[in-house]
Image (cartoon, rainbow, N blue to C red; front, side, top):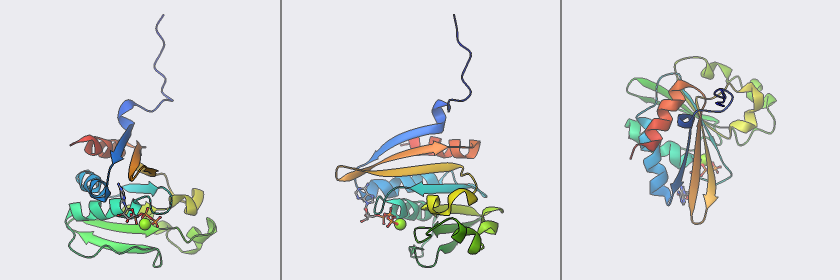
Length: 166
Ligand SMILES: Nc1ncnc2c1ncn2[C@@H]1O[C@H](COP(=O)(O)OP(=O)(O)OP(=O)(O)O)[C@@H](O)[C@H]1O
Ligand SMILES: [Mg+2]
């Protein structure tokens, strides 16, 4: 007897795991991701302190061609990059103590337009934050890092394909 396909299971292409042996490998993954970034996309970066989220975002912004210094937005909450056709906002919500702070900070409009939103510590903004196209989770693995990417939309799946490309 054959079983019907289970549509509750994510498709194979919606998920990817990788190993990042050193910071350069993290930056290279960012460069690969840059090739798949489209206007309006939301990419969320999870992982504990120092797991490599900013390093990955730095690689992505460099991959898109920015020459400017990529600052950590941990105090400013958000940094803007305008790179050729794209507006990118880099957020860091580490300092939020609860999800009301996201609403109080008046940031929801950033997530509605054609801008690309790159978010560190999305969990600190709670359920007020809209679903991402792609979620990247970094974990410590020996001296390096492991990464898991989960796509939630077709645009996110194109990012997964870019992650896989050598
Ligand atoms: N694959 C890797 N292997 C080893 N070290 C790495 C790797 N990727 C990044 N790092 C290093 O980890 C350190 C912390 O990186 P980074 O600042 O990107 O982390 P973060 O997740 O943004 O931290 P925070 O939560 O404080 O924002 C840096 O010194 C960086 O060079
Ligand atoms: Mg960081």
